[in-house]
Picture (cartoon, each protein chain N blue to C red):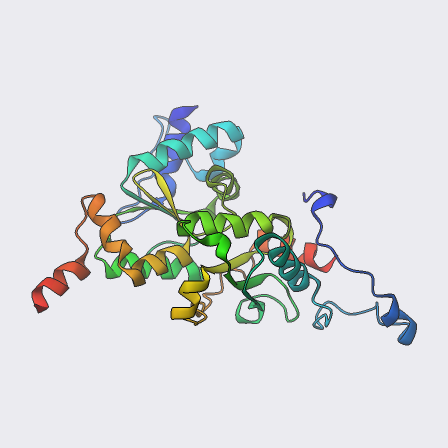
Length: 156
Length: 150
């Protein structure tokens, strides 16, 4: 069951490449296979997902094509700081993921951002962190140097 | 399925029904002047966070939902209860106060949570980003709109 979750999670992950794992008989794991998973499995899968990558975003749409203004704002903020390589999960593709992540984070809305497995917040919080300089600091803690910091250094 | 206990509160407006017998019959497309969800949000935030300043803005008209919806809100809460709390804890307090609305008819909630000092030094309301139409055809949003109408 866990490998099913891992595979479907990989399918949902969007970014530079979309990986659709296939079984030996050619069947494709898709997010629809998720209906077999119990809610507890999704909670466990989410626990793994948020730990796997430094920056994880649950959003509507994809970074290339956001489907919501708030999700897009998160993508744009991360892009401004030069954070382009992160895990993103499109909740519009999977209603169990959508409800599961809200329960997991105890947070009622999407988008949701995780840094090193810790829930940071949604669009409003990310925007305020960006405006007050906290974003640069938080990214530094992740070992990511914000490109805004680089730009500032260059201008001095 | 939404539990009935979480249905949004709609106050009974008896005075309105006396003066206009058909006032209760209102096609869902018309804006509801009583704005029950907005009033409920305002009441709960006032009761639970005792704000010095509170703004509740219905931003549904900026999104891909029918006119008169009460599904997308922006709130600005200025309260000394936020002092010493990081943003995430402040937002969680607001979410907790509005958990009934958020689990039934409110689909999006933009939050600004400031201390009186922060509000004093920067008394401005943030603007929501432009809608990208994600609510259109979204089954979850349709359920919430239905909950708001009931």
